Length: 392
Image (cartoon, rainbow, N blue to C red):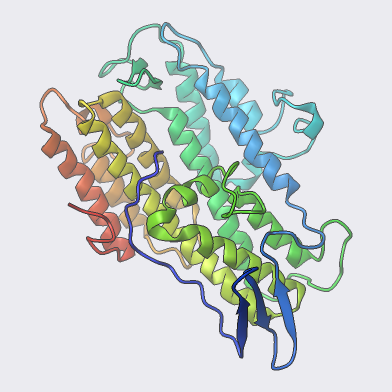
């Protein structure tokens, strides 16, 4: 996804403090714990006993599944085994690379982080890749195959023009985002121990917070250093010019972790809520971003294949919204169905993207009216104004 600023929305992360002072040179913030005691907020995520190694491994395991799926993006056919993808999802069969990190024997399974409904979705995606990757012809409406964009990017498309590589990636991002929200929701309560320190991973509450940070997918020096950011970290950086998500999320992670280590329950709760709210908006922002990119693909000489790619990203993001079962989630199941219906009113569960981008029968303005309808509906649901949506 290209970096396009589409929002002017600024989400401010605030703390209810008795007093606060800031060294503008080092950006070190001293947050009041009570009227006399202060603790230091580090500039980077460098606390004692941080351990997010499992979460970082899971991100890489998802990368490797995506790389296997992308082997199918070869003109003339390059079959990919659906069973292999399922085995990787369940970490059986020893398919992961890099023995230094011991992925295959780690006991980590991406499927363990998914609801039964999400597992069913992923298995369907893997079956689709396995079936459609056997095609040896060029993609066309009603015929699976590899389509080539004007920029010579190759995409394995279903008979309905769905690029399952992107549907998988955006859906797995939904899983990671849901884990962040779920972990931090648990952290708001007082049942997670914050007294017994385990060397290398801290207290249970500190470790929970670190796990959420690991799923964010950013370096400890983020946002000062953005190199290496991936999944939600990458998307946050891409929309940061409008959303201000980089600083909002990172500061909340820093403040919340410092609050936990200093037994500041109120500070921890405030920052957990900041992250939960911002992540909910970040996914909505990602859908708006894909609509902008679809418009850009249509403007770029009517690049339908590239548009199928961005619409497939949209499909993945919309479906992933269901994985967030938090009580604080803004969008409802009925509204998710509305967005799916805007992709295809006839078959929302199996949208035909060829009909959405019908360059033989629709003008650019007619196609953009569809993307605008999705953008507008997201804006209505999340309270974005027209100017915040960067509408023309």
